Length: 387
Image 1 (spheres, rainbow, N blue to C red):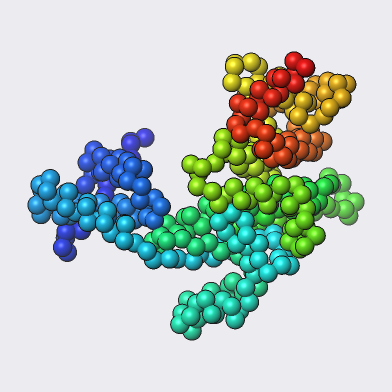
Image 2 (image 1 turned 30 degrees about the vertical axis):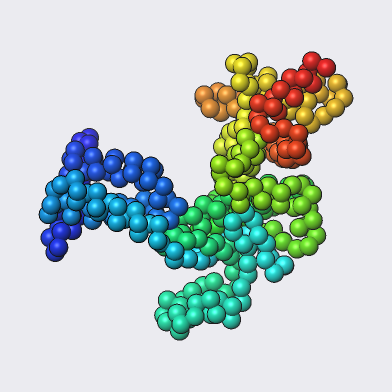
């Protein structure tokens, strides 16, 4: 199969000038590097920056000098510094029933605005065709609200990213609200549109004509909502979910190592809840355990994780031995799944892994005042092993 041909163009006056092959590839590489190194990602999307660089190319097309390039880029740097337009982004959600005025999770706020409130926010746009469509579509829905000083597409990208991080906090909290059977109940939270709109259906018919037939319909979409009320808010506080949500507001550079580890662990735990296949859920749950307990000294990872879980989650020696053996067995199934082994993943395995991962995350959250890094966590486990 021939390699795909890259091409791009930029506008000079009313004329389109095109680049292809190595020239287009070089521009794409330059554009990506510039986006990463310029720091413009706080306000501009990658596509927006690419368009700005095309404008620089257009100026160079008419006057190909270093002075022209420096002047054009300096102007765009100044424009970036002066960009102060605030955008508010509303992201429709699924799987949440909101019984409190609002819930702040990190940089987003979960709301359920009335039609009048939406109309107020839309202002003059409320009477336009797009505005009326927004009112009809969003009224009665639970939304995530995000605000940022950024051009519209970058504001949208940031809103979706921050909403997903907030939902990971709620997914961690779900087992503390519904302690048994939450996966079977289809309890989950998501951005609207994340899951297929149609169900997976099967029809089971007997080979003999005995007038019987079985019909099944399955969906990964949230089936029943997570009710956000005062009682469940107390459970979110007890399990540390609201404490973790505060971490989402901190600039990445100010997070401690253990705080970054907790957020990564939450990501994989929440990711597991979204899988329909048992094998993928097992991989996400074991990755969650790895996030916290992967050894740094080259020791066998399965043994290290099993010992770490046993020491952190149970206290009696006999219980620790049982826990270590069980976690090692469960983790062993990961290799079978990843490398084509034959170990079956049972629903009972996943029930155990969900509970272990949930308890491990909670334990590490409670230890944040004592350990500030994964290294310190592993050293604490090693000290416990040595008595």
